[in-house]
Amino acid sequence: MKTECVADISMNSVLAEYSRELYEQYGLLMVDTSYGTGNPSIKNLEDHLRHYAEKNFERSTAGGILNAQTMTAMYCKDVKISGYSVATDNNGAVLNRQILAYMAGEPIGYLMGEVSSNASSLQSGGLDSTDVDAMASENQKIIDSTELPEIEKEDGKKEIISIGNPADVVNSQRGIGALNLALPDKTGISESVCSLSEYASHRNLNKGTGLDDQMGITTVQKLILDQYYYEKCSRYGAEMDKAQLKYQLEYLIYGLDSDYGNLEKMAETLLFWRQASNMIYLFSCQEKVSEAEAIATALSVILFVPELADAIKYSILFAWTFAESISDLHILFSGGRVPLFKSDETWKLSLSNMFSFRDHLGSQDNQEGLLYEDYLRIKLLMTNHLEKTKRMMDIMEMDIRQTEGNAGFKLDYCVDVFRAQLEVGTKYGYEVGIERIYGYER
Image (cartoon, rainbow, N blue to C red; front, side, top):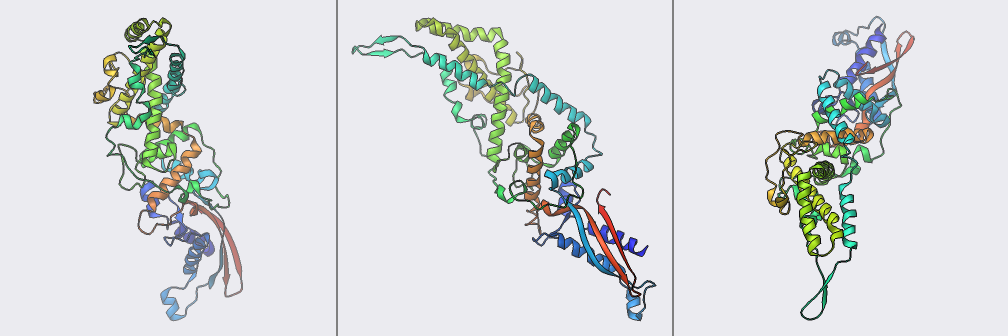
């Protein structure tokens, strides 16, 4: 009974020394085996367990003064950690198990359903698979390959007539980049960078013994993990002072080493989606198609190339789609809403405004549709689960290392559950051994 009690008290005392920062920032319970020294080792945990076991077998202060003995005169002969699991084991299965336990009481069913529904609508609508830029490029090849008539100048030299395609004004700005076009003033964008080689996803990891690291992840559990990321991580427009990388959700998706790089990739994703959505609406709106067709027909007649009428029309429509999409991005990055699919009421740019679209980015949002964070959560849901898990480990390490005494914090040395063997002796020569497994969910 005494051995049982000492094992229970000692192993629970070890678990009581969990990382305070990991708990306070992320709600997780694990023992950092560096104990703030910068030198993590399972041997440190073993020494702490031995200390508690020895203390619990010691005589009381009064007993020591009087040289009194306990009835059994027991003492700790040896302690050994024979098995353990760390947070990063099995590609983060241990970490995910704790996160899911933490999220067990969260009423998030409605929210998760909404994200799933938005993602399903986006994918079923073809927004993630329709490459409008590629379509526009193929159309441009038709225009470029057409032989145009020549005119004779006063000096007798001949010159090929220029089409004067109004879409070229817009197309010439495509190379500027989605983020640069959507946010002309980039002074508010975070300049934070990190050295990824220092963090869990990019270094060789310490491994536990496989004590409790087997876990399959269901679709529902993946949604719950995404909700955890959303609650604990910062993003563009909702930055946190504690964060080394300010756009952490964007990092979970793209994994680049700078805030600017990750935000730029998100802008490119948004542009891809918005162009697909806007093209679907624009090509189905007969009134707007007729406007583009009128300009294209006039140009083709003037240039005596009627065969280019359709190609010029589509060139104008693709340019209009691009300009409207940049307007959408500006609205989203400014905190406004943009619906997944446009209508006559939610379309912003007229054909005349399309030619100078950068002067018309201040349009008010639609008062309906999705916010930037909603589009971000769709992309987060669509991102590979394993990649998100690894990058979440990086984020935890980045932020905890910024706190006092945790400069060398590593998740692959954070223990969640361990198995210990205690060997106990008595002055009468009897011995007993005991083996127990203790963890935060046991």
